[in-house]
Structure formats: C-alpha cells, structure tokens
Length: 456
Image 1 (cartoon, rainbow, N blue to C red):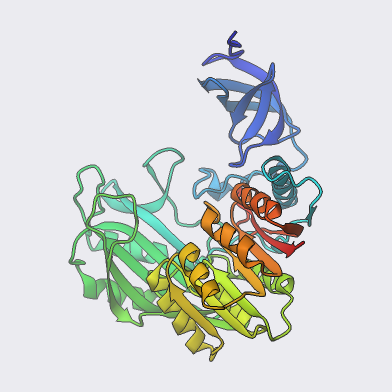
Image 2 (cartoon, rainbow, N blue to C red):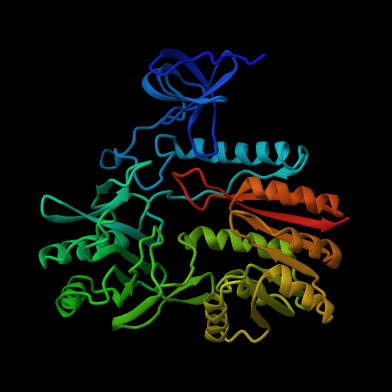
C-alpha cells in the first residue's frame, strides 16, 4: 500500500529543522516525510509554505522563524540576493565548520561504512571573506546599460552586482571597470535567446602573492569592437593589470570559454605562488581559486605522504602540476598524469619555471597511463589522487589495488564519491588512517578532504 504524502502544495505548516542537505537547505520532517527549505538551519523552528511536492520529499519556503539557531547571523546588507552560490552566509563561520565536519562524518559512515575513521576538525580560514582570486560573470542589459553579476538561483536572470563578498577586491574592481567601459562604449551584451549581441562574459584573475591581474573578455563575435579604447581604459584604471585577453565563443552553449584566445595587450601569463612554488596562469589554465587554503591542503598532502627524499610518487589527475611540484620538493621522482593536454603543457612549464627536474608529466587517462607505467617497472611508493567531483575511475582504483603502493593520499572535493572510493580501496587491502577536511570555499557548502590510506 502506497503511503500518502502528508503535505500538499500551498499548505502552511509549523516545523522544526533537524539537519542540512548537501546543498545547504534545512531539513524538516512532517510525519517522517522530509521537507527541504532554503535558508533554514538545524535547531530552528518556524512557519513554512509548501511550494512543491514529489513522491519522496517536498520543498518549502521559509515564511518566519520562531526559534533561531545559535549559529544564525545576519546576511551582509550588500549581499541580500544570496547570489554567487553562498548557500551558508546566514550561518556563522563556526557553525559552517561544524556543519562541514559533520557532513564528512555522516557521508563516510553512510556510503563508505567507515564509522570509526578519524575525522579531524575542519581547517578553516582566519578571514572567510574576499578569498576568490577568479571571477567569470555573465553579461546582460538593463535600461540601456550593461549589467554583470550572477544568475538568480534556478533562473537565467542576471543580478547586477558591484561587489561579491567572496571575491578579492582586485577581482571585483576589474569586473566593474570592464563593465562600465564596455557599457559607455555601447558594446552590446550577448542575448542567449536570440544568439545575437557581442559580450558574453567578463573574467578576471588575480595573483594574490604577485599582485598581477588578468582581464578576459569573452565575446560571440570574432571582432571585439573598440578594442583599442577598451585597452586604454583598462590599463589606465587598473595599474595592476598585466594581461588583457580576448576569447571567442560563437556557439550556443552554457560553456563559458570558446576555443579561440588572443592576447590583445600585455603578457600571455600572470604568475602566482602557492608556498614556494611559482605558477604561470593563462586565461585557460586551471588554478585553485583560494590559494591560501590550497597551501594548507597541499601541506597536509605532503605531510601524509611522509616523504624522505628517495620515494617514487605518482600523481593521478595532476592538472597543471600543483600537487606534483609540491611533492617533488621532497620526493626522489614524481610522475604526473592528466587527461587535458593543455594542463600537461602548463605542468611542464611550471616545473621548468621552478627549476624542478625530478617531475615528469604525461597526457592521457590515468586509468590507461598508470598501468602502462606499472608494466614499464615504475612502482609508486606513494600514489596521490585528486580527481574531479565524480571521483576516481574504477580502472584506476583497481590499478592502485594491484600496484600496492605503501601509501595512498586521496585529495577530494566531493565527500560522497570519496566515501565510495575509500570503500573500494578498503575492500582491496587498504586502511583509511585519517581524514583532514579543509574549508576551501567559506560561505558555501563545499568541503575538501585530504585522506591518508596505508596498505594493510
């Protein structure tokens, strides 16, 4: 017999919230039936309106709070729209760190069946605002002027903003200067409905340690109107700018960057440091958006690797060599593999930039390249993985189990796929020793983890 749903659309209900979902919505239960409400926190009670029902859950809107969480804080007045994915900015930073630690514990226990593993308190930031070194914002038009900012949740409506509180001030300033300049020169915004117009997105990247700024204008058209005027204005108003880039994306797509990139002023690269390692960053490079916490995360990976100078290390999913080059400072040899050829070129360039000669990089799928290295006699003492959100490929996990490195250091941006992969490695002969969560993205629900596994 099918159990009836205890709530209906447009019902007003008094509830108590007991948890948060992985994307930061409050969870209440009505006769055991879960209702998800954005903006609510655990330990709160209040009135909600049911706005949508499904077979297994409902979605509600918070109408009023009767009892507040001790972790509730006021949203900064400038940030009332809750744009930019800041799902937890109504929660104190202490509360955010506790929530993220609890999230990691729960997911490891539920998915990985790892109830007894040591999970350390989350390593947070001293100043959990103004940390992002990169922004790429959509451009639109309103009242004859260009607007740029963030899409409202679950819509394509752009909220114009002069300041995001999680971006570095230099990034905010660069976006505003480009927006104002292009608006004054009459450059049309791209319209995704008609596939007409010119300017699609504005990107800014900033090297926090070097003070170098890059501006990227992404257009539908091959030509950038008033290119010289734009360049004059940007260089006059942004003294830290070292690179101005034009990227062309002529396709009907949600992908931001197109395949054609031209430097229209200055250098192809800006530079930044993570610890003592210097990185060259192009318009297309992947580079961590919070380098302060990246240093914390990578130092933990280095600590877990426990290198003494003679070890061979394999870095799967090496990207532009960020972890590889950190490890190479202490290892005998490091081999890095990455599926994106451009990233491998960047990794080789970064190794050369730092005078690091004991790191080698190869383009290809980790699950193909690493077994080849294994057959060629390259045995890893330590294997490091830092996969995308979907986690490690099954073939790679099996290769790790077959290769039997003494240690595996798993860096993860998704606790769910981390827990799944740890279970596979545990069943294949490894012991999960400890987990260190790191808060790379304050005010959001995301949490990174660094995990040490040892061969049993």
